Amino acid sequence: MQDTILKYINILGDYSFKEFPFNDVDALIFSLISYVNLPIKNGITIKEARNLIYRKFNLKKKDTFIDKTKMLFDLLGTKDRYKDLVLEDYTKINTKDEQFGAITIRLDKHTIFISFEGTEDNLVGWEEDFKMCYLYPVLAQESAMKYLKKHATLNNFNIYIGGHSKGGNLSMAAGLSANFLTRFKIKKIYNFDGPGFLSEIVNSKNFKKIQKKIITYIPEESIVGILLDNTSDVKVIKSYAKKSMSHDAFTWQCFGGMFVNGNLSDYSYNIDRKVRQIIGKYNTSERKLFVSTFFRVLYNSGYTEKSELNKIDFNKTKNIIKEMYKLSSEEKKILLNIIKIFLRSETKDE
Image (tube, rainbow, N blue to C red; front, side, top):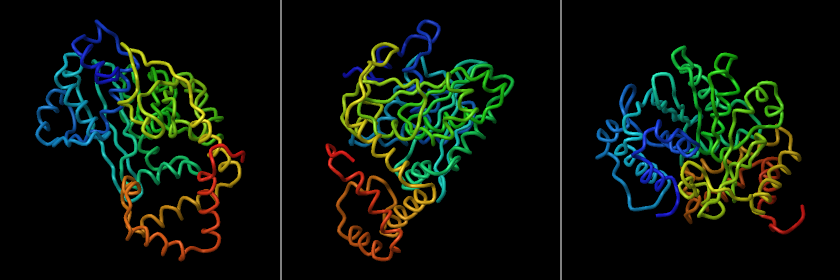
């Protein structure tokens, strides 16, 4: 078995948090729990939840990220370190404008970990990610702020917040909204390969108040985690995967309670350069026009999930061509110009 979080759980899963203290690898594990569809509300342990929904998992043979999060949760329910931790306030929002998920894991009477879900396969969540290049806060960020406020009670002295992908961004956004007392209670904010913010947000007073509590981890060939501006404390992790596949946290290398250090690749630097070129070249209105146009074309062509874009579908491809003809000259121009930036040769100076 490769040195990933699954091996970590198998080796150290029988040690209590007193015997082997909570660490950043545990934080990643908790951040992934929010991906699991849990038909529960309050006061149930991980073991009880695992036993309750075990038969509903219907694990597939495909090695997909969501299937692996289900395997992860199933394993946690059998390990002494995790099985008796209490799950609270599982929340799920899926509308035509917002995709949001969160769950609270209680480590002890006064300590909680708030886990925010990353982007699911539906286009709504992906569109919301794109909106971050011109809008703050998006609906999911507002939901994260409300969720933290709800759980920053007098009883919860120690609050950890974390998420993978968009969930990492939501964790930071929630921290940004915190008042003085809640900021004092927040011990760490974990951003696992999640996008950053527009520069004006990163340079704001509220961001500077929580910046020292943010820990950002990205894989060597990160795409999502290098988008927009982020905290200065960025740690790079070695991954067994390449390019976009390295976003899968189950490919990240760890040893004991630490991640294996890596170096950001030229591939990631190039993506970062292209995105910054777009942000610098196009104003807020133009970026908004691109996002609304791009997703309108996809929706009207019959797409509902991001994974569908990886499959060749003659009818949907034909529909995209039809939708392109319907665009105004302004919409067509900005859509094609931004797409060209990403299609240009990786070695060409821009």
